[in-house]
Length: 328
Image (cartoon, rainbow, N blue to C red; front, side, top):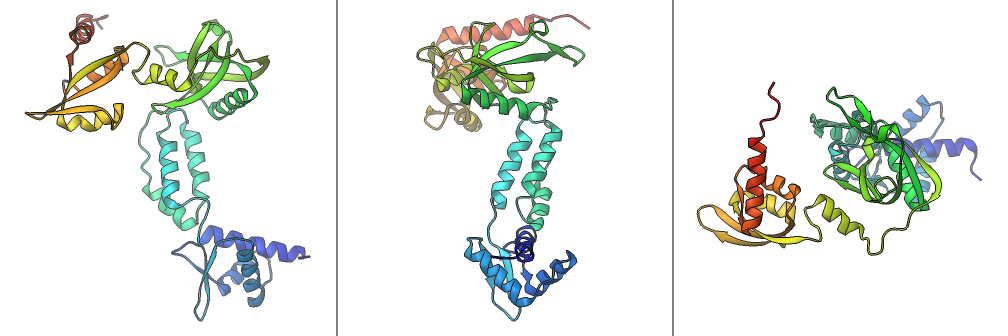
């Protein structure tokens, strides 16, 4: 059985190679011995080589470059640098994660690669001034919602908005909401929990970053209504689809093909048109969500037919511009 000193030496060699080596950065046996001695761990060339061989036999992916002084490096970690960049970008883009927690998560992600790659990772990240939540309970909220779903239990929580002074104001007169959570979804960089609300007596969505003091109760969840489908519900609420679908023909500028595909997918039915435009035939719910999506392109996308949908869109625009609101 290996002695405590041997175990400590092997663990420290593993940590050194994991933290300080990769495919571009190596450590020789002498360098490893020097680093161990700084930690008060005595080591010799033969013992270090034997320890590394033992790590390799245990399944650790350590590579050796043969030379007058063999050079060792950790060939793989939990994530590649490309994977870590992707995860970091996702953390930065998520509006429901606060700035403080984003920084903490990125620091933890950076620790999953060598110090050399970690520095490279940090230099490639641009911390844009994105809108971020100020709710530091967000991780606990998500965890409790998931736990409640897995256990089939109801949750209770406070829910808040912001007033004109940007102060939090509790909804429901400060009383708790009771919810039977069925699933969660991430839409437009925000996290939502979907379930049956006792107060509303129907299925509803709540933004997790607007929830406070989430707690799991002893009450079992109300069964989901017969025929409830989470994917269909998300399509209806967030993606301009519902049971009352209508086929709409859009006239779009050619440069907006990407926007149409992003919204409706590669299978969207399109037809080229002259003078820099194309037609797109899409199935949508004629709702404010859809009209708002069309409006954002400043005339680059126009509703051609049916005439009823075109008229509704024009009327909505007219109401917006006719209503001057309270003048300052």
